[in-house]
Length: 103
Image (cartoon, rainbow, N blue to C red; front, side, top):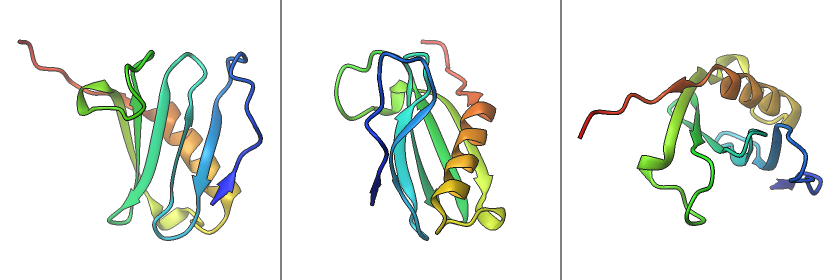
C-alpha cells in the first residue's frame, strides 16, 4: 500500500488518496468537484466508479454511483504506481453516467 501525500481538500483538483498496485490493484480519491471515486481490477478490467457529491456515510452504496468506466488492463503496468494512476485518471475522465430507471 502506498499513501499519497496528504491532499489539500480545499483545492479543486483530481487526487488519488490511496493506491495499491499489483494484480489486485485498487484505491480511491477525489475528482475535484466534490465527487469521490474508487477503482479496482477485476477479471482483467480496471473498473472505476464515480460517486455523487456529499455522501451520507463512509461507504458508498450502489445508488451513490453516478458514473462508471472500464478499461482493459493489458496496456497498464499494474505494478507501477504512475502507470496505474494515469490509467485511473483517464478512466475517470471517460466515465459515462449510470442510467437510472424512473420510479
